Every structure is written in C-alpha cells, then in structure tokens.
Image 1 (cartoon, one colour):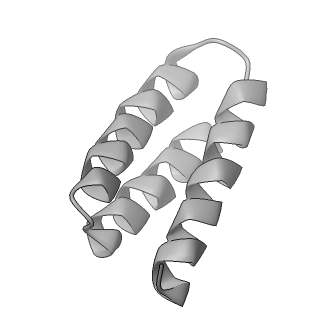
Image 2 (cartoon, helix red, strand yellow):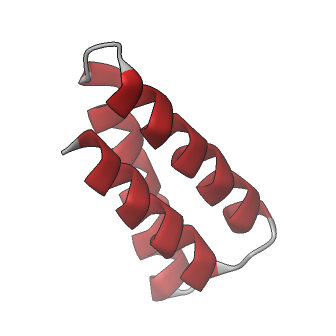
Image 3 (spheres, one colour):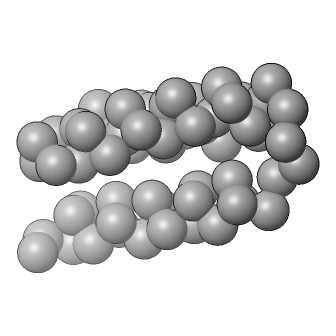
Length: 62
C-alpha cells in the first residue's frame, strides 16, 4: 500500500471507532451513510472520494 492508502485506512479505522462510541440518533445515522459511501469508494480504490466521505461522516458526528 502507498502511504496515502495507509493514511486513508487509518482514517477509516478512526472514524469507525468514533462512530461506534457515538450515541444513537440522527447524527449517527447520517454518519453511517457517509461511512458506507467511504467503504464503497475505498473498495474502488478512490482515495479522494473515501477521504471526502470520511470527512463528511466526522462532520455529521460533530
């Protein structure tokens, strides 16, 4: 994996951990949609889209 892919994978783990700790509610539901989109983008090896969706998930949880 390239350093960028490693950074993206670490970011996914971090966002998932934050999501796991979040209380149930509309913010968590919105973040899940972004996280799932990030997983799809990651599977397609689209790091830019993955990072965009991870940022949106983080923002939704804030």
